[in-house]
Amino acid sequence: MKRTAWIIVCMLAVITAMAADKTVKVSVANTYCKERKAVPVVVKLDGTTQSALVTLDGKEIPCQLDDLDDDGLYDELSFVTDMKKKEKQTFDVVLSDEGAPREYPAVCYGSIAIRDRAAKNQKHMPINAVTFPKTSNPYQYIFPHGAVMENDMVGFRAYCDHRQSIDYYGHQQLKADIAETAFYPTAEQKAAGSGDDVLWTGSTFGCGTMHAWDAKKGWTIMYDNVRNTTMEVVAAGAVRTVLRITNRAWQPLESFKPVDVVTTYLLYKGHRDVQVDVKFSHAVEGLPLAIGTVDIADPNGAEEHSDCKGLRACWGKAWAGNNPQVYEQHTVGLAVNIPEQYYKGETRFSDMEKEKIGTYDEKARKLVMPNQALVDVVGTNTDHINYWFAATCDFESFGFKSSKEWFDYLENWKKELNSPAAIEIK
Image (cartoon, rainbow, N blue to C red; front, side, top):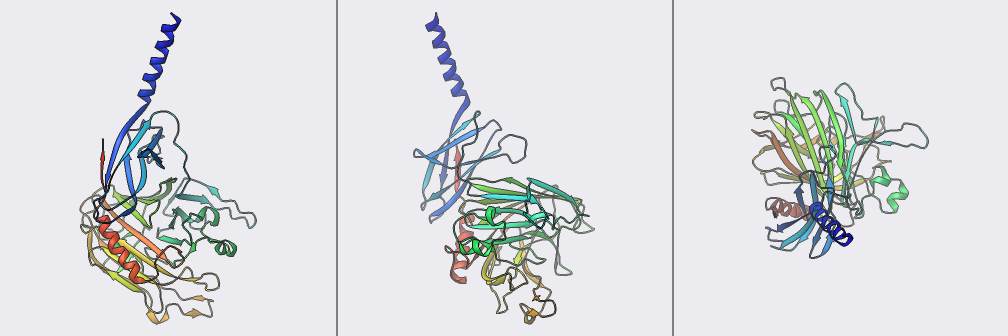
């Protein structure tokens, strides 16, 4: 009798274990004619998964479980893989409804904090999100002036004022270090190989923000007229950082009814480009929009590159700020890539004559810096737009040495984006 009971208990344990785990096959095919690095793979989940194991040919692959809507349930599993030309890989993914997510080195970083303004021993309080009405400007109260996303190649922050411009933090080494430098490295940290802020954004798009566009004035329309704005760090870990900015009741034009705009930034491990997904609360047909970058304020003139179909880039000497005794000058490359169905044309704006750019104002004791940008005018008849932006600088020990190398890389980048990996889940 005891032996029979023991057998029944063992059988129940096996059945329970089988019920707790589900194995799926994820096939990934490189449809591109060249090898690819860090191909993102995303698996949608049904809300029951508590832990996951991803293997390729028996080798464990770091993965990340993300709760994207903050309901306590995991919505997506992600990982990245390197692939040879035309290669096909099949991953075994074990999903369990018990346990906790496996721990891997956190390659991707995200942060936002409330600034401690005490003069001594500053301790900024980490938060996940902040919401502020249009009557408030939290720029001086949020550290470091907005939400941060970083991986092993690049770092960015989204300013938490009406601009919501994307600022760029260049890396010397393949290592995330903003957790230590807080976007403002000391001389000792830079000497030891840390990154640094390398770009002056001004009142522009920075590295690739989306605004509205006033064709009559030839100027960008930012997020001034909103009910409120929420910035949040949604996820960060071994695979990717996810930031989200929600602008409620945005009304860029009097003739256009208010719309909620949810912008999600995804930065994957091993990528210098950021995927941007913009979702509107209703279709925005007829609303002129703009995506662009800083027109680098190089006194000698920045170099430009465009295919007039959504890929636009620049390369030149850039200051990170208007105090030359504090900020160094670095060569910076910026780029946006916009799917052709959204692209309407390109233009630019500037509030300064070229001859004045970068000159020193003795009275103000600062460099004269313009607000100028390369602008791609875009639009959609639906409630969605997606695009990408990328950046590089001469700070990198692993980067590009010339504008030609940068522009050649971008042409290949666009071809890769137009040939996404084919993913099949069984």
